[in-house]
Length: 167
Image (cartoon, rainbow, N blue to C red; front, side, top):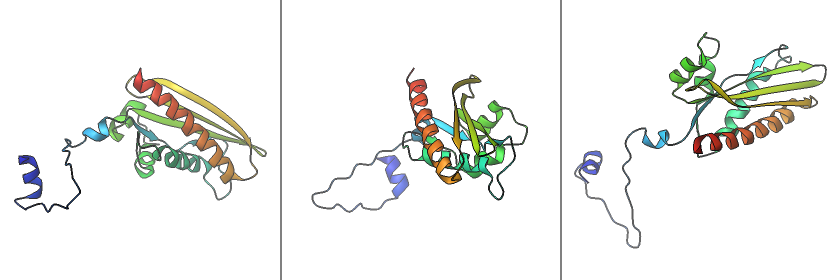
């Protein structure tokens, strides 16, 4: 109660008949610390970009969006995770800077009308890769392929993160 007074001051709190309110005071950072934290780095483009479309960033961006839909996971925003990529930092240093335990990295390769996406999940505290997947598709509609593969990767990553966090 004294902490609540500090936060609210010496104001009276109005009550609404028939409704009850419960204030739960959580130490700063405690709620986020209970959830696994992950950063998705921009995927490397191993065969160059498609004209006018940086496909590696697109895959990573879509994957960030898919993972962020899960409320049991803390996902670092793209501007933060993309900023550490290419600075010559190792996985442990990137994770420390982003305050995450898990990093998702990947690559995009294009050959003719085919695209191959490879993604890996690593635990920066141990340096171990805990999940990896490769996805091959015909590249007819780049956005449809990005949607399909980012959803598949997110589902696989969530399953692996839940398994690793509960072991």
